[in-house]
Image (cartoon, rainbow, N blue to C red; front, side):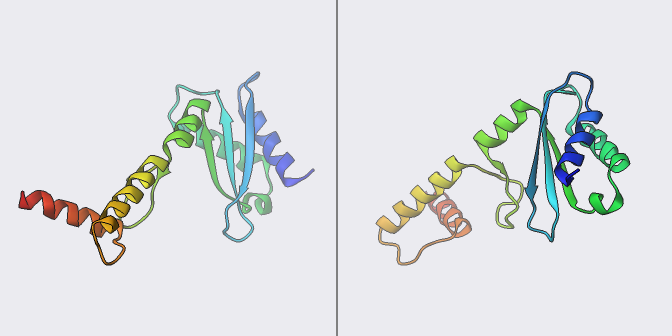
Length: 142
């Protein structure tokens, strides 16, 4: 039985009878570890961390220690949550914008602001932080 089959079997046994799910294994980029993403409508009313704990406990009881070390992280999404993440982006981890939402629309807006800044004769490309500071300075002057 392959690693993926073992993880899928553990996840399916953790879910209530009749609940469907999709299990995605994605390489994490950290050694040979993977991120396990489970998309299911089971336990919709429960908080996310409890859904994750249920899956993690089942994986811990089902997989060998060497297989457990291959898992870096477990995510459990409802279909609605996954749709929200895809449409609106994820939380950023950049030090200049901790906890801010980084969505495609935000990136387009930042690109337009930079283009406008460069169009007004700016000599260098400004970072997001510098661009925001310049905008705040203009607001305080007026």
